[in-house]
Length: 70
Length: 154
Image (cartoon, rainbow over all chains, first blue to last red; front, side):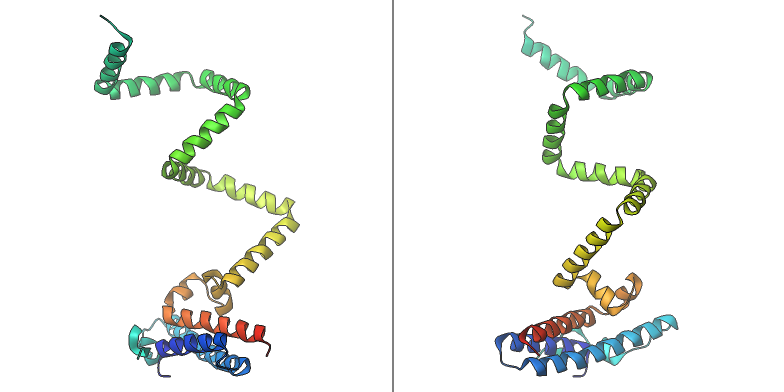
């Protein structure tokens, strides 16, 4: 998972699989937990740069919208 | 021959030609007779309350956009008054306020709405707008997965 678009697509897939029963609830919860950590760290990074008033390129967030699509 | 239709047609044509003049006259009359007109309207309202309410409702239904614009304008003009009323109501009804807040939070939580995501991410409007939409969508999906997993019994 290299960027936020891939993360979103992956989560979307996990959600669909969880609903269809293809994945265990416990595994899905763990994946969601890890995704939460990634999201929060990205959020903190955005806030940090906003407070410093600089606009760096964050590879995880700067990927094109369809980068995660196959 | 001078018929009713002919008279109405003449009046319409006169009004069309003298629109501005008539509007000025009307405004001047209203300004000069403000109290008299207010008394008349109050009396008319007291006597025909239901009729007036029904007519206003029908007009509002037929002119939805105009009504919304008028409401917005009125709210804008009476901002302070409304805020004061709201504060007074909250002071007088703390339980109702708490209940309304709970109801609102229940709704936004179940819908996983923007307001709820802002709260979960602990961000204000500016901070929220800085976040890329994919990140917000990921957060929404993460919450939905966690909920679904809980429901299925982890």
